[in-house]
Length: 117
Length: 116
Image (cartoon, rainbow over all chains, first blue to last red; front, side, top):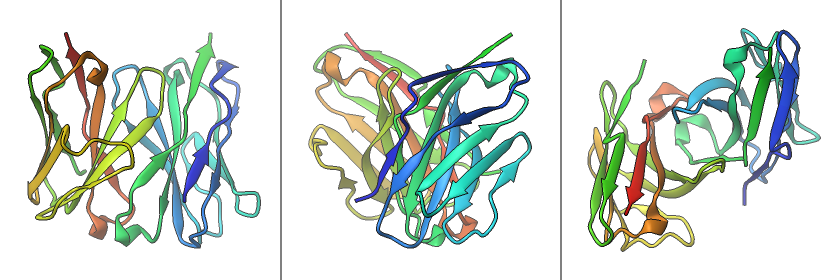
């Protein structure tokens, strides 16, 4: 069964500093996708970044990058140059199977990030 | 981009009544819809997966008779919480996937249910 783990319930970071949010996963399926979402207090789910299991390079989207270490089954999110607006819950999620199979997303426990001015 | 409209955003109901939550894909066909439940400061827990025209698949521990899911068309899925009790108070959110869009999952804006 697929499993995804975030071990940091809460994190603090100084504004303009970089921060790494940890995520480890477990699956026996060779095809899978890893996602990071941001959830502000409003509750909406904001997609940040995606990494496919066969992608050779780490994904990057603006200030977000995903440190994908396949052998260690980790997919950490790095946020560079933190901003006050980055304060939110962050969720790591995994989909087993190929993307066009439309499999379910399973979420980690989440990390609450607080950015200090 | 793809949009999933979820209504209502907030609802307060009396214990024992039923509440229906709708998720509608506005510009694409949602062949599969996922329903999640989230308690404060906790993760999104998958409740069920619905496919258009077929019965929903419920996750272990989710009461299918209490949480009725209907996916009658490619653009509409509904979750009905029957005989609601205070412990059903939670944040419910849907997510649609359109396989031909690649890896995209589009989330509704969520429904905050309070049962009094």
